[in-house]
Image 1: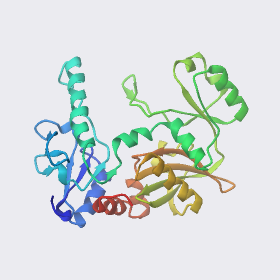
Image 2: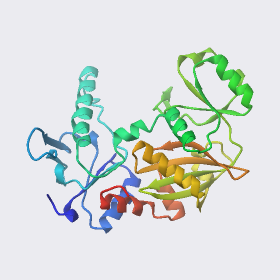
Image 3: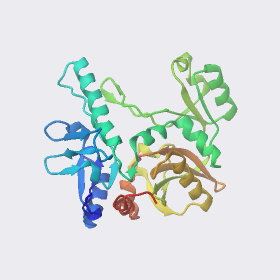
Amino acid sequence: MAAAEERPVLVVTESDDRTADMVINQLNRRSVPVVRFNPADIGADLTVSARFGTCPAPVVGQVRTPSRTTDLANVRSVYWRRPIWPAFQHLEDNDARFAAAQVRYGLGGTLYALDAPLWVNHPLRNAAADYKPAQLAVAQRLGLCVPPTLVTNDLGEARAFIAGHGQVIFKTLRWTQYERDGVPVTGWAEPVTADEIDESVRVTPHLFQARVDKITDVRALVVGGRVFAVRIDSDLLDWRKDYSALSYTVVDLPDQVDKALLAYLDHFGLVSGSFDLALDRAGEYWWLELNPNGQWGWLEENTGPEMSAAFADLLTQGEAR
């Protein structure tokens, strides 16, 4: 087994990821070795070999990139950021689907089998925490204020809910890459009225939510037990629409909210997550959603809290706090 100071952090992400760059810079300052790769590079730029059914028990094998080689048994921690899986567009459809599946279940399965003491976050746990109905139920059980929400494909139920709550917004249940006439389309949170929906609602479940009378939004990043909260002021219903219209202020959340967010991550076995909250005129914080692997780099750049250093500290330590 390699000495602790020689054990690398695996950073699994797309090639252009400024947020990962920030964390890697912090790891470099700590002289912690880093092996970075993207699953889409499988082939000449990424090789994996793993052997099972041998002693000792940990996975035996290597991951190799053009500049780095690491023994899988010696990984200190894994930072699972925003990896891109290969699509094999140069192959015929059937061959491409087959090859893509082999990478996901071969490379992905090997990585999931690692006995690494820390994942930030394990992709299977990210996936389990990414279902909005489950998020809403857990948030409510932990005592967070959850806006009245309906998930349905029943037109009558949807219209009755909208009529009963007046101001209602529609949200997608899962962000999905989507194009219309070749133009990318993003599903923002949007106001919806009863007469705007029709029988097409029956095709899939939809999420309708009573609009919070908010005065501001808050994004709270939790990293290994540390909470970084930033107030995001704008006149927008969905602040993601226009980053140039935003202003930021670092804030402290009430103690009970901090504790609820930490308990939320514990419930899903996560060590980090980005929470979106809304603050109303009465000073109440309302739960909106969790992104288990949400963006935060631009907040550090605009406000100063050393979020990237907190990630580096956690990954260097190699175990959850």
